[in-house]
Amino acid sequence: MYRTIHNVLIKLSRLSFNKAATLGAFVLIVLSMITSAGFIDVKHAVAAALLGVRSQPTSNIVTTKASYEILFTTATTGTIKTVTIEFPTGFDVGSVSLIERNGIGAGVLSASGTTLTYTVTSPVSIAAGIPIRFELSNIIHPGTPGAYSISITTKTSLGTTIDGPTVGSSSVVQIGTSAIANGAVTTQKLANGAVGPDQLGFGAVNELNVAPSFIVSTFLNDDANGHARGWNPSCQCTAHFDILDSSVFPTSTVLLTLTHDPAGIGPLCGVTNVGTGTFHVVCENPVANTGIPLRGESLIVTVINPLFEGP
Image (cartoon, rainbow, N blue to C red):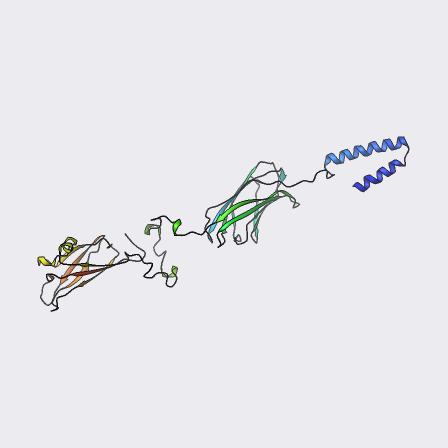
């Protein structure tokens, strides 16, 4: 373009004044039209930054699958053919699905590596200041916690950048025990069989991490404390005892041991009707033909509660 103008000016210098003036005026008119039409690159266009870029996940826990809401506002009027959303290395977007889109025409979402491209089927000009929103599902977070940047760019059908790339920040965290409130996980929130041997690694449960209420052993003596709990052989009046024990639930297993007298003529006792905070004891003595325990006999109670159940 500039070489052509230079040659025209040389030819003008070789013409008579009148012809040169006429042709020069014509050249000026043409130059004015070309400039106004934008064919001469008077000022290089620079892509603007998108406005209000946000990336909001439904969960920000490492290695979890989440849905993402991608939001931005156009800064430049243009016919958007594609929107690229670049996730950092470590994210898995291979199974991503488009749930919803707003502010932009219908199109198709594709994935390549960690980059998503939304291609508009029939693009039209979108004015500056228009909010655009994508809701995406099945995005898997990396296994390393930290802050991550998600880059967004809008382009024309020729691949020319309209706005961007503009970065929105997101973070992924590692959850720990301090992030779980006391009582947040209860038996009512776990389906039957949700946690079992198949979900636990070898050695995951041992004597160091089992709750103290898992196995409880107590002595009930023939004294005031034992009597208050329901064990009272000194009365010599019954072979049935209702024992109070706060560690017992309907799902508990209760084992009994009697401290028999040296002669070994004491009764045998068993458990029936286990409830919340109580169980019933029945004693028998086939030798003496009576189930009444001997005076001074102590009862050793061992309560075993299911590992993943409670009250």
